[in-house]
Length: 298
Image 1 (cartoon, rainbow, N blue to C red):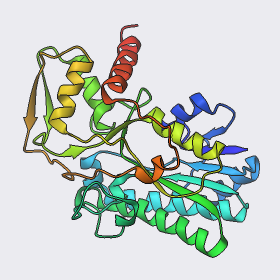
Image 2 (image 1 turned 45 degrees about the vertical axis):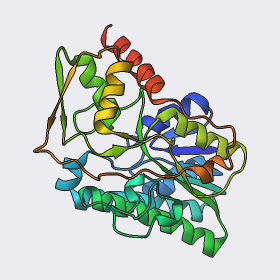
Image 3 (image 1 turned 135 degrees about the vertical axis):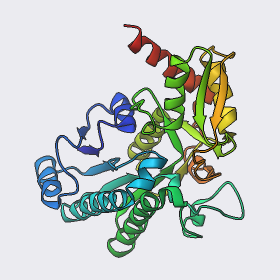
């Protein structure tokens, strides 16, 4: 039996579309910061595989203002889940991290898995980045000490139909789609538009997780398409995909840009998933925009 934490989130819902027979757990079901509740959850479902998606996530401002919350809640959740998985002898664990765990600056881009500990995470989400980085070390430690078949994936920024679409709490592309939908003549974005980003359709990450389960793949992998765009380029691609080319994009450069770049190399993953194809950015944005439009035109 497969149990998925964070089942009501973006990736969880995409995974539910293609893996409907798993059990999907949300914060309404169990508080993963409480070890006893995590043990109760494991005792009820007795899974042989756990996909750990649950995390406290948020935008730059929330990360800056609440660093203790991001560190403590994520470390507690991750520790409790892994500890319970060991106690209940869960055969396979796949945990989802984030490219935020990588160093703020490295000498060579895109970053590879072995670059993970070559410097501190970016200051704007330092606590979240370190909490997720701790989980990488935690899983590697379980594999070393107990010979576990546990893995973690490090995806780039995500977007998809199941995002929150909340100001400064959704992922950038999802927030951009909402802004484009609501805009008449212009829209405003934070920062300078210069930082470089990789973005992946949430359904692609779900497909990678399912492929690892179906084919009994164990390992730690970056997950990201090869294309890298500036925030300004992303805005232009978004306008075109949403058929709103004439919108004017204005930047509020009094607001932070965040990390300048954090693109990663997925060649290790693609050497295992040889025929895997990522959804193009324009296709993915169009798909999400159409879904958002339909929901808000009812």
